[in-house]
Image 1: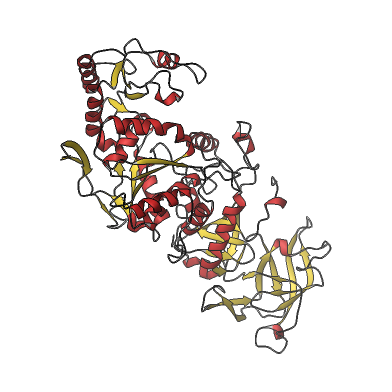
Image 2 (image 1 turned 30 degrees about the vertical axis):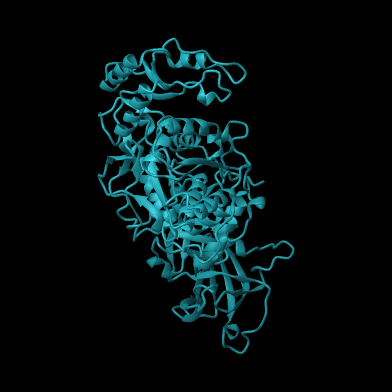
Length: 604
């Protein structure tokens, strides 16, 4: 999609993290501000991740710094190359034209290189470089640091700060205690340094089965913070890794790998969601225990973005996709109803609208939810500026202008986008037979109905006023045709062009229009908090998708996936990037023109 970046001249957001960074810049504490966005490739990114991306890349952008996209891929059993590729695509799309110049990446195939700084080992990526272009950007991988992480673990063992433990996973949990009572020391806690080094090397060599042994930090089994009660650093997993293959059978735990990966990459400000607040003391303990050359990274936490009518849990989204695809009502991770970045992109939401929403949510330490209507407003605001206007009829009924001859064509001038500084126009053809929206006619109209009715008048947008003279029905009583008279003197430039009627409706020529499949998407869930009772599947909105065969003005036959359209009076639409073909137009509704959710079936 074409990206309309946020105005680079607009003032940067203000929040407590940016205040901290500004102070560090003023103090010249770091040569360069470096942040990172470190998803685990065990699922697709969702709208909640957009906030973290905008914070991480935004702070780097505002301080002429660098933000590294890093895969924290330390659990190969749940990670896949598909997820890596999807994450890279999503991040590039979201930051393109806005913060791609501060994207840190490494040359393809580069691995960590060791050097000595102040007499101690220090690890940096070979030729890491920001801003050389999105096309060739390769993400960082925690798995590429496995040699360095192993060496650091050996150092902790040599210092007497880590030991090999033979407790099972269940016994490890039992020994850890609970928040209201201290834990117990493992019976293997006092092994000698020599024995621990030998066992750890044999773990690496593959001598032991999964779960037989683990490497744990030696901290304090009575610590009030449960994360400091001799946490696991390494576990045995005889599982091939999507980056390292079968080279390793022991893998570092996230908390151990995370802080050291930050250090290896020179990250200065490690920004996380609030759930990692209790992990920060362990983050600091590992870095301090290794006596690494300064400066060290520091972790800061902020609240997640949690929109209503949405799930922002990877685990639950995996379950949603599995159930939805198998049942046939969901097409996959990029289904346009999904809150994933790929689904949002496929639905036609501009990256600028996602950024507008994520940045506008603010950065706080307060857990709260954000109304999805705020996101929908941001989408409409962006598309109102970006979208070209076109005529389309979703649920057509034929209308015959009886005073036009068969084959007669009347050229009408239509505006492409009134929001442009210099709006352009195109020509649409009024013909004897046209289609109008079935909802724009009522044989027995309700009060204050200003659209077409028997004997009533409306204006055809860009054309003229018409009067309904006759209603034709089939044997079952269904309306098949409306016969009307066109007042051609009310066209633009004609003597009666200023004659007023209360209703204006859209239309397309029946002889020139093109058919298209149009998918009318709506919110996937019918309640604001779909997981409040733990059973989100029962809250699926049964009206989240309606598929119609629509009639479109002929100019849309040449539409591309790079274009945004407003189907006048109906909503914003894009060509589906997966299913549309030159001979088969498929459009997705991104969003309606107005928030009609309160009145819709299944709405609040």
